[in-house]
Structures are given as structure tokens and as C-alpha cells.
Image 1: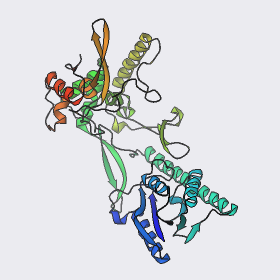
Image 2: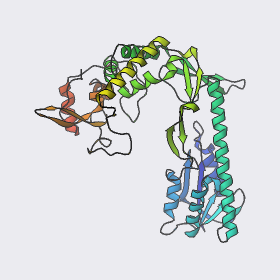
Image 3: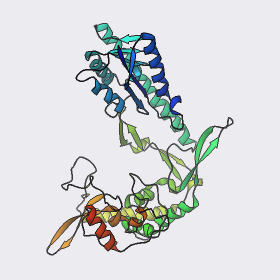
Image 4: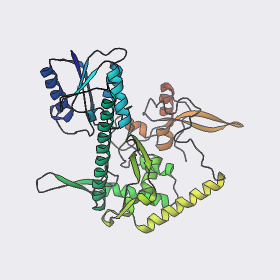
Length: 403
């Protein structure tokens, strides 16, 4: 008989050789089990999901390939796994996946127990339900253990996430020479940029104006995402102004990563669930500056709402499609910036054009950085960017940086 193998591990093992990873060991043990049974493992039918939770089903590439391979007819007769929890840790979805495999004529074996999972009788089905329930319960216990560990670290002042602009993550080693925990230390160069942002905001500069000024001066910026040039954007300036860590307060547990089904779906937690810890050693801006900045931001928000009769204009983040084709799909051919719709006066009406967000909302000098310049930004004439973007599909209405 031809055998297939499925292996999965929830957490990705970074810094570990491929042959030493848990999924590699699972595949190796499954191959040995198949040899003992006299089965032949088809290398094309070895399915692996590394670093993906058992509560995720629609986003597991190996799992999806496994289910698609049995339609219309499975190229193998046996599927070998270490245990049932490798297939999933959500009772309903796991039972349905097993039903699809069994009804496709595939026999499912677990090598740790040397047992076949059958669904021939009501007893088999109730045993499946009990096993899936136990696996899901273990996932919930693991979630609670992780939450408790993160809570202890947060209250102790240790880092529970990634790096934050303005700080360095410093490892603290234990007696065994291994990393015990990570703490934050103020990065003087980046902290100075943070102070400049707060000072500019206090003096009345808007988010766009601050971002463009920083980019024009070649100020160090946070890490970029999605291969964009490393630069300041209005959104990153806003994140700086509203992050309480800069006033010496660590706020943990503001969001929840997964929903009740264990799937990744981030949402904001209620303010009552937040955990705030004073950390005066991490303060970058004074309380007076913080209060002054947020008093100005609150006043601007109230003025904005009066002008719009209490309505927040703009495109919703979800649920409403844009009436324009390219936003969210196309990118600028010169600097890889996102495409958005920009309007301007055109006679007695307003005309709408596709524009490059990196050019209009950040600074024209980003074009120089996107070409690989490691030095300070050197702004170029708008006409250069206009010609290149027109050739790449951008509109030709680029102008010099907004005032």
C-alpha cells in the first residue's frame, strides 16, 4: 500500500537545524512506522505544517494540500500521523477532516499508539469526539499557561513582544548561560527623534507635515514592511504620539490575538483588561510634554468633528469596498509605494487621480532611497518622479511636496 504522512507543530522553531525540528522527527518516525507495516511512503504525499496552530484549518497549506489530494481519488491508501492532535485541536473541524479522509477511502494510523482511527460505528464516533475534546482542552490550557507567563513577564518589566522604536532589546542571561529574559533600554539616537516628533506636534504640526519633515532630513525611521522604503509615514508618527511607553508607562494586554475558535483574529480588549506598569527608566518625554501634545490632539479632533457634523470621513478599514480599481492592488513602479486616489481642483469641479502614497504622504526623496542610496535623502525634482510613475502606471499629476 502507498502511505502518506502528515506532520504539524504549533510553534515555529527558529535557529534549529531542519533535521532537528519536531516536524522532521515526526516525518522520520512516520517513515519508520510505515516500513514496519510494509507500506511504501510516497515522497509527493508528505504534508507538513510548521509553526501553525492546530486551531487554524483554512490557513494551513499542508493540511489543505492533504485534503485536496484525496479528490477525486486519493493517490494513497494510508495516512500516518504521530497522534490525532496533529490533524487539529478544534473538535468540530478535526472530526469533519477525519470524515473526509475516511470517506475518501484513506485509512488513518497514529504511530505513537500503533492504532487506526475508524468511524464505522457509533462507538468509534463518540471516541473521536472525546479525543478531539481532550485535544481542544489541552490547547485552551496551553493558551492559559502562555497568558499567565506573559502576565508575569509584563509585571516584572520584561519584554513580551518585539522591538519598539526608541528602545533596544537587551538579553539577560541566567546562571546556565541561556537567555532568561529581555529588557528594554533607551536608544539615545532614536529617543531624540521621538522627542522631536512630540515637540513638532506640540507646536501644531500635523502627522503628514511631521512625516515629510523627518524624511526630508533623513531621520532614522522604524523598520518598513512589505518591501517599502524605510521611512516615516503619518501612521507611524501617530503611533509614536499615542504610545504610552514613551511617558514611562508599559501597557500590556490591549489586544487579543485569537478568537474563541483559536483562529488568528486580532481585536481590541476592553480598557478594564489592560495591565499598566510604571517604568520611569523608560521615559523619553516628560509628563508636561505628553499632556500638552494630547491636549492639542484632542482639540484638533473636536474641531474636525464640528466641521464634519460629528462624522468620521474616510474609507472604512473593512466591510466597504473602494469604488476605485487600483487602491490595494497596484503599487508605484518607482518606489513600491501603495496607490491611492488623490483629488485636486480642475476648473469648476474636482478631478481625481491615482497617486503614490510614498510620494504624496511622505516625501519625494523616498525615490532616491528606493534605488539603494545608503546616504541621507536627496530630494529630486517632482518632474523626475512624474515621468517614471507615468511609465509605471501611476497618474502623471505628481506635484512637489504638499505644504
